[in-house]
Image (cartoon, rainbow, N blue to C red; front, side, top):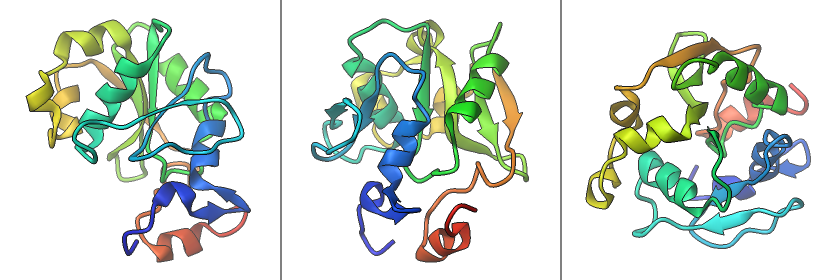
Length: 172
């Protein structure tokens, strides 16, 4: 998106970051991994991985390290998925029961960056600091028993281009 900070892009009069935080209305704690501090309507902890922009695995693990509480389940959501809601996260949490986690899958069966993970099991497969930067999320999650949760409507849509944003449209 021409180098624009996706978190600040607006859809339906709110930033993509605000949409993402809304998906965690049930969470006791929310950590946002971003290159710099962010302003939000809800209190969140903001952290940046070192070095910045190390990829989804580095971001996920940096966020986990910043948690003050020790949750059983950890939620992960890319900021560019504005149609993931609290209801989506509840479905993922329910699907994860008895497993290592659950992730949202699009209509083509591809795993999206929206899911929940058992914190203990994530710790079991966690690579060292050097190994996490640039690591594919697929590789991190490979040894885990994850439920695949089919998306409802456009909740698996992500905003990678201005056309994607336009296609989501207001209230779609």
